[in-house]
Amino acid sequence: MRKQIIGGNWKMNLGSPQEAQEFVEKLIPKIKDLNNVDIVIAPPFTVLYEASKIIKGTNINLSGQNMYFEDKGAFTGDISPIFLKDVGCNYVILGHSERRNIFGETDELINKKLKKAFFIGLNPIVCIGEQLEEREQGKTEEIIDYQLKNTFKDLSKEEIIKTIIAYEPVWAIGTGKTATPEQAEEVHKFIREYINKTYGLDTAEKVRIQYGGSIKPNNAEDLFNQPNIDGGLVGGASLNIDSFYEILKAANEVSK
Ligand code: PGA
Image (cartoon, rainbow, N blue to C red):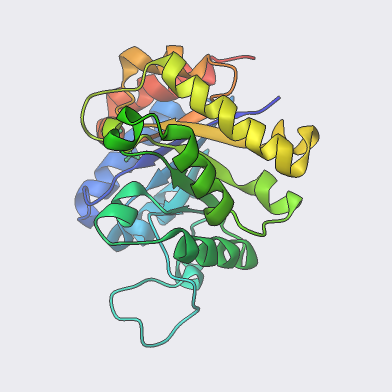
């Protein structure tokens, strides 16, 4: 049985210490009894320290939104995995479609970051997903297969089991157009089948695959109840305490 996992990806929002602190302080008491779901928040770098002090001893995990693959040095504007660890993160999001499409990150670069995350001891949430044109041209599986082969290149069984794969169709992110539960499940099943072919059934059954793209309280339950969907990566709806809580509650109530 796989435990559902929900990530709140704040993106470039709530980055001032006061607003982040207020948000997390309100969130903690609301979600303290949700024990059937792993909860992760990914605030901007500027407020990770603030958040980490407040969540100590709670059921909330802390994630960076990105990192570089070197420990330190002349990499202006980037962030070291060691800094993330030191500030209290135990997760990191890698290869988000905004990193891929706006900042030009490649599968090869993301693969290097992924290996580094394992080395440092950060649990990676790694995003993959097709663009709208690719879906319309019937290329979704081809694209996903390519990303799986290259982003997850040379990972051991132990590493792939620790990886949280986030399937995020790019056309559904921030657009209000959620994939239907059936559309999402079809790709999740394809991803699990790829892991089965590459690592065996035992491993495939352990890997958690999140869905991401316009998850809202009104579609969360149907998505999470799909056999191969193990939670979600939530952007917009994670910035509102009530909607994030409703989504967490939906995941907490799933039993498959
Ligand atoms: P969204 O973002 O929920 O606002 O669509 C999801 C994501 O980018 O992880």
